[in-house]
Length: 218
Image (cartoon, helix red, strand yellow):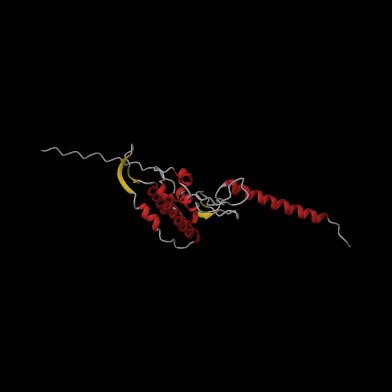
């Protein structure tokens, strides 16, 4: 008799990767930077709002984009396309905050189409498999547009809002679990709002005390 072939041992279950943070709570820095590029702002220590022209020179534009850590440097001929991209990005985010249908993303898509993607299979030490998709761009504008498209595709519009301080209209994206962020930044807006509230409270208390001290005329 021929020997009965032995059955292969049952495969061990592959451990599943740990849960990732909710995509909707991830920051959208490129989107916020471009949306706020043409808005007036009131930096700490300044008494009035100012509007900075980030597109007047390569130096000014590069300073705007520096926190994003782009792989490519902005070229001199990129200023006008960058301005158009900023205007369109602001129009899209303004529509999202207002609950309206966003306008056509013509400039954004034209630049994002210049990027290309590669996909590879990654095998982790625990045996888990993931598809690794990476985008590649040859210019700063294409890289920036690709990031903005990615951020718009994953954000929660309800977390996109304007600073609650009346003197500020800068946009921010609330990444808190409680969804209760009110200001685009703690400094200056959060600090100034609390200072204003304290002045109003102390002023009202002083008025009440002053009224109570007045003699009653019969």
